[in-house]
Image (cartoon, rainbow, N blue to C red):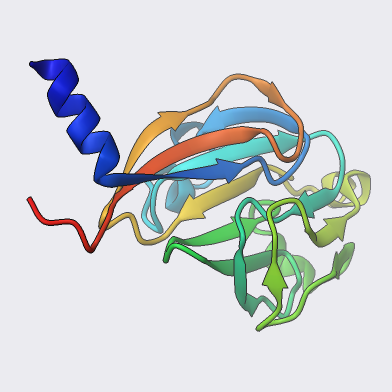
Length: 171
């Protein structure tokens, strides 16, 4: 009986994959050294301790915002998922120093397209944590079914899996 119910649910749900935005080690949000992210005030997600300074899109979608300081972007996914990719903690204080944006507001991106690059060594020398939170800002209608933490990942590896109930299906 439960297998039948599970299959019915799976037919009525769409699986969405969120990819790693950079190479590095994944950590749960509650281990991020910033209370806004650690307490998931902006939303749930995952963070990456990066091993290089190239940040790629974790989903297919449209760039909703590129911060003037080039340290973060907001993406509207094709399935309605909204997220923020934020490289570094308190790095807004650098006013864009050591960051280079490779996208503009309104650009369409595919998972794996370069969003921005940053100089890990210089940012760390300036006293900032380079941890990169990937935050889902609109979880309503979605359910996180997988979240890969404590793992070494490459950009493009699946780190979060969500399901979204299909809107046109009836119970």
